[in-house]
Length: 415
Image (tube, rainbow, N blue to C red; front, side, top):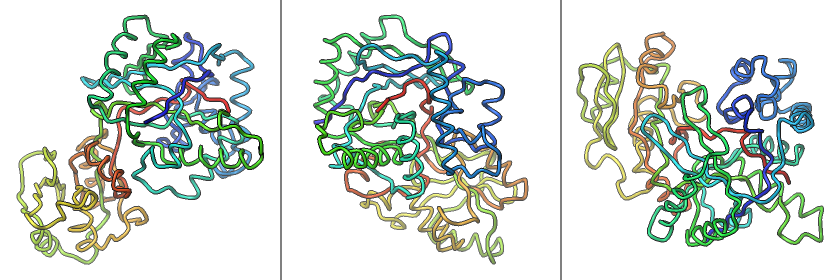
């Protein structure tokens, strides 16, 4: 059983939504956020990336950043750019990118279910980022960015598709195209009967899965614990017992490849490098770019040419939910034993490139001379992600790149 709850959102006025919405806080650097916000004083980047309004020498985790975020959120409220919903509502949030469409339920998810692992994780969280999101939520008394969740799309939850289609028969609350050419539509759902249907249907989902937003959900749990500690008379119904989420059927989420570029071959010559690769992979040079078309196949751009690497039978652990994932295969059979990159998330010799940037970006990075070799991976599937989460384990670092991204500033949950 999965609990979802409608809420009284703080949200943009419809005529200003395009000027307020922003990318999530964790996909932009300080410099990129400042450039994107430009001279737009109502961009939500002033709330989720308030360091853009402070001198460069101020650390992004300084207390003054959280104070500035709170000040900017209050300014948007005071000036009437953000409005309070009069009654608890769900929202249908659809995104269209090229020929891909995904339909998400905007709601509150349960911190209790997160703590009890009814909401399943696949990624370890880092203390610094936990503390950052906890301070942000606690200082603003608000959750400003949603967690991306998934439910298993099966016969138990199939009615959600019919509900979504019925909701779409009315006019949307918001409709806009973002700077990345993604079309966003939002419908408000405040009809009591529809709310009941949604809750009944979602209660049939055995589990929810975090697709993206592990630190936001962990921070929601930490904030809840802090507030319960300071409120001996808590009932469990307080707003801080829930966190802002958008929940999609797992079949509709779009995972793109998360590729790798490496700065050098260490002490290896080209011939030594290729000889070692042949121990675990079948290697062939190809004409033009090579984009892997199925699992356990990799593209490699090296010395101006593309190569196809196919994992040899028996070279990886097929029955292990983590070690059978392509990011693990590449790590265990090439990056670690050949290039001596043992902890890719900590190494300065490797960087990760989201698949949205394409294979040409890999060529560009290698041809620049900053990197010597690039690897293109086949995207991880939602089924693989759920198998790892069901096993209570973590995915390899930098395995999933979800597109399109959820926008921040469309819905704020006040605690």
